[in-house]
Length: 405
Image (tube, rainbow, N blue to C red; front, top):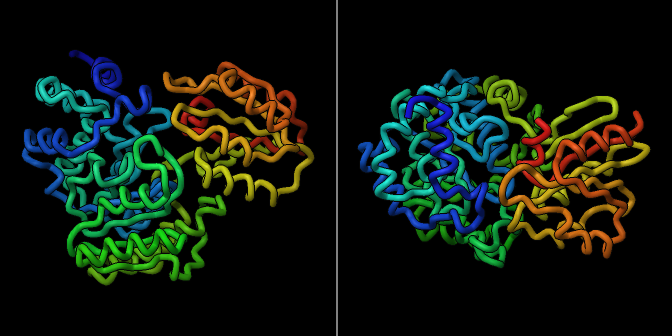
């Protein structure tokens, strides 16, 4: 292995990869990650961390928190997934992606061990982040779970704070078919005596999170009682709930003697995009016609995006949307407004759904649609069709947004 490109190719081609293969690449359980971490002397124990799980909102909360810590002068690690353009987006310190050189050296170092253990892509990536944060001696690392929580490979950390953002239907084939089952999987990140921040709104799920916290003898903090009025550069309406969750985290961190001032909080909320490079959250991509990109890809996310766009004034609404396998496509399609023009596209990853596969559902729902075999054909078509007073909304998958970016 001589180059970064070869190292990246090994990561994507040799390891089971959920993004490409779906459920067959998911390796539940923590045995692999414990073995891998052990082989590198457990780098996850060398830095303080905050662990964030949830169906929607965990990416935004992770980035806002990182931004506030940066404003307070800390050296902040941030591990999130998936990436939109470059693999190195997943692992950042103070908004700067880890270097290609680090990835290359890490893959070279771990390759033989990985060949014996046969881990997944996400397990290797998780350990890579832990190794990087340990080497770079970060003051704090914000760690976002991949799937669920209990069996997620990030769940070998001992954080100073566990955070559950919100819970809705997603990845039912892995996490369970009811919200209660999904919630229990997320609750798997709750640790003995480590405070829990609960950003969920649904009372019956809050009860589950509260009960799990009590069983683990932890301090339970209901973030929905927060009253934050901080302005954020993240403009999705759904960010209001995320802002409350982050505010509750900050109050708890201050009580743990982290030096974070009101000015740091103010600037952290205001400069999240600038500080962390977060993209695809109600992002204004073009002004005339107005093009908005949002990574909403499940029932709750799509509902929120559709509600928000209906508060805008426009002549016609054009929606570009695509899906990957494992999504409840039929349910999502019933949520879409009938009076929009649709461009159903196929994202450029192996587990993308070909829009032809759900053509009948679209016809049954009486949508006005055209199908495309790739994202950019759909995008160019929408741009061509749209007048200046129209809006183009792009939804459905991180991978649709990635193709456009």
